[in-house]
Length: 345
Image (tube, rainbow, N blue to C red):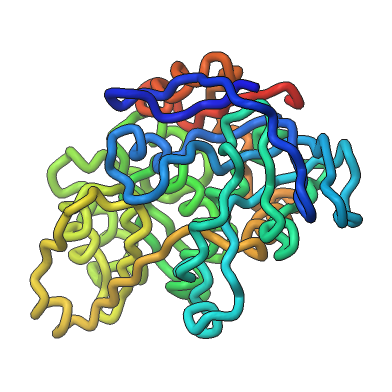
């Protein structure tokens, strides 16, 4: 069986291994589609402090059931979440399941970029396998996990009715965040992005103001027009560049919130005037990953037509061309969201 793994010198390569077998309580899924996430790209760059498993936005058809699995059938169309929390530790009981110490220990085997992958017993048992609605195509299915990350973040920071939101970095997940904020009732959503293709996707998705951050004063001017100079309720750092945090702090109102959402560069440091944060009451809240309930809610929003997703997938490549898919995903001037497809597609 073919699967993608990290190669030498920051590359992704196809390798061979034996096909996965469904053990007790497990399932095996034939790949239909898996999105290339920004964290996958960071793993190639050596900038992500996790195991080097590639692919976690995978959807497909169940090809095998292990002993004891009764709620699923071969052929079912599913999304399989790669991580689950334990549900019992102090972190989980406090309501922070994505920060559970065991959350990242569960994973798809050998990852989402594989002809087939095994879903561990713990993931199956804890409800991390989601049945895809008939209205959800494979492309949209591959966007459920990153959209779920945005929804988990919005739940974590809180989004009062009629809020104003500014998203710094309109890559795929920033675009999902902006569209979700609109779908959940934000009165005004703006964003900044260098790549013209991604700015166009933001405008197409109904974002109220989209600016190029390289234009001097553009961010401040957009926010001031929308808030009469008061600042937005929520500024979202949807990129890993440390300097963007400073920009976000300057855009929020007194008592506003900055959501640290994009993966920061390894070793980066916060550059902000702490006394300003203190005196203005600005909250800095990190968010990480997502949970099964939020992925299911994203699917419901998409099925209801409240969250447009399909247009964000602008390129697809078969598993045999996974290296080209990664190249495209790293070129925002050429693509918005890139997916890798498999035999079930």
